[in-house]
Each structure stands twice: as structure tokens, then as C-alpha cells.
Length: 257
Image 1 (tube, rainbow, N blue to C red):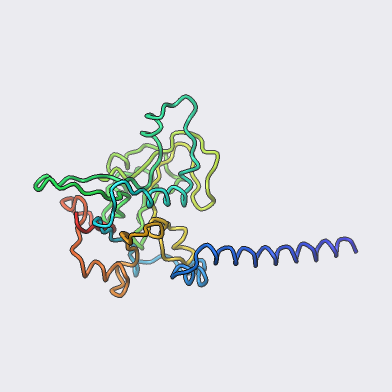
Image 2: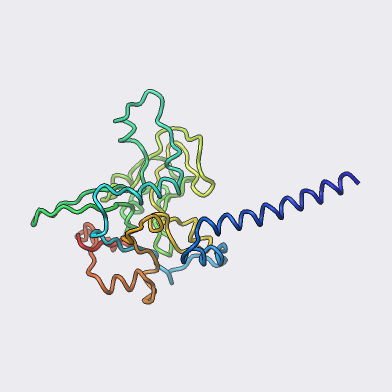
């Protein structure tokens, strides 16, 4: 009798938690399109294929000098804000070693002298140099264009970091105590922006950096879909690739650089 009572109590508790979690999620994201996305979100059932190529357009004219919102959102989404400075390390050393998936950088046009502030992350190249130099295949490019690192086969040689022309990859130097389930990490592995792949594989269609940018500087979506917001923005505004001379056909493009 007691076991039956306990079972009913557990069942009621699980039902309450399920409902409560749903309400909390709706409260956090409402109002807006993202609420609709969450409501219909579900894990991907089909294998990744090349009918989609994920990418983004960044309007640098909307990137305010000193704004760090996209960087902070990326840090929180991927647990980078949970990393702790190693004991004995100076602030300067930690600043150099701290993993970052997005960096706010300034680019100077050598012809005009104009300086542009923009977020720099993995550019998700069609022909990624990091993949070419990886001796174990840990660096790889998915069929949908996302360039990633398999931490289980990464040996920490850092060849990929040397090959990346965007300085977009980070190395984990120390043991990690706290890490999100969606973004596991460990000492001795390389990592970088993966366009919030855990969201995409669960039916969402936004990245944390895009959501955090209240200026609308970041437009994310399917580059192969002519009706997607990113494709329409690319058709409307002139865009460039950073280091286009390398002919990597990046998935991240910029305007007003």
C-alpha cells in the first residue's frame, strides 16, 4: 500500500515538474518567434545532409564599440563562463589562455584606414584548413556546413589552431570541473564555435549570439534556402568574406567592413 502511494506521489511530482518546466521555458522566451520555435522543437530524426548549409551574416554597422553581448551569450550558452582561472595563473596569463568561441576584434582597412569592430568566430569554411591538417580526423565538417571538433578523437596537437587563419579555436589547458551537458569539454582538447549545433539538432533554428544581439546585427539561417532571412539579407546587402583571398568559401559573411 505504501509503495503504491509512493508511486502515485512520484508520478504526480513528475507531471508537475513537466508542466512547470514548460511554463518556465515559455516565460523565458516569450514574446517572439523563438517561443514558436521552442513549442515545435524536437530532436532531429533524419541524418544531416547537404540540403542545408548553416551560416550567418553580420552587419558590422550595427556592432557598437564596446558591446560584448554576443560574446557573453556564447560564453553562457557553452559554459565558458564556468571555467575557473588556474591556481597561480596571473590575470594576463588567464586572459591569453581562456577559451573563447567568439572574440570582439577590430579590423583596419589598410587602404582607407577605417577601423571596424566585429565578432570573430569559426567561419565554418567550405574548405576548412583545420580539417585538412588534423591527423586524427577529429576536426571535421558536417554535411550541413558546420565545422566541429570531436573531443573523443582530438589529441590536442593544435595543428588546427595553427592552420586556422581566423584564430578561432581554443585549447583547454586545465581540468574542467563544470561543463554543460550539451557542451562537454576536457583538458587537452581543442574547441570552437559550432553554431549552437545542440540547438539545431533539437529542432531550434537560432544561435545564442543571434538571440543576444538586440541590434539585429546577426542574421542566422540556411544559406541554401532562398527564402531564409540570411539568404534574403545576403541578396539585399553587399557582403564579404574575411580573408576572401584564401578562397575558403566561409559560411560567415560580413557587411560594411
